[in-house]
Amino acid sequence: MRIISGKFGGRRFDIKVPPETRPTTDFVKEIVFNVLQNIIDFEGKIVYDLFAGTGAYGFEALSRGAYFCCFVDKSPKACEIIKNISEKLGLEGKNYSIIKKDVLNFVRRHSESGLEKPDIIFIDAPYEKKIENNLLNFIKENKIYKNEGLIIIEHSKMINIMPLQGFEFINKKEAGDSIIDFIRCNL
Image (spheres, rainbow, N blue to C red):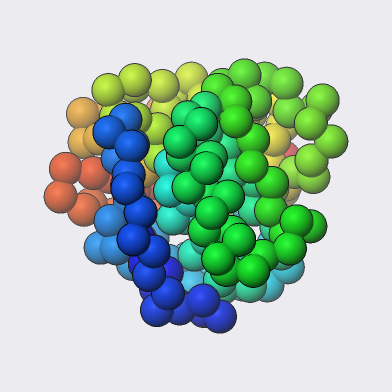
């Protein structure tokens, strides 16, 4: 894994990716962050990296100035990878949290977490689960976003993300077999 830009830009991590994890490629990450740099300033933002895997989206956001990232993944191996990278980067505990939990359960019980609502949510669910629309509904029902917050969903071309009232699609990019939808949340 490589961090592309920011204060940790150029740092590489040789990690053994668990077989159940589909790591985000540099190509996709560059597409996402090229769009985001024209929409939002990461400085001081709260970020959630759901289905974090190696934490690629969250670490990139932290490198670009995000204040805090909550990494959520149910895989103990993924959580260990994120912990190791956090330590190698010298991140302070106040700047990140690693939650080993099923993402849907985390979202349903968010109010119990004590975590601040995010400015940006990255979602990169396993394609075969096809849970993106359900997850968006849970995020909306539980109001796990700030007004004008952003949700970035990387998903299979076989999935159509359904629009929800108050969620505005502001951009869409294709990358191989993937689609990346950029959604602005309005209360």
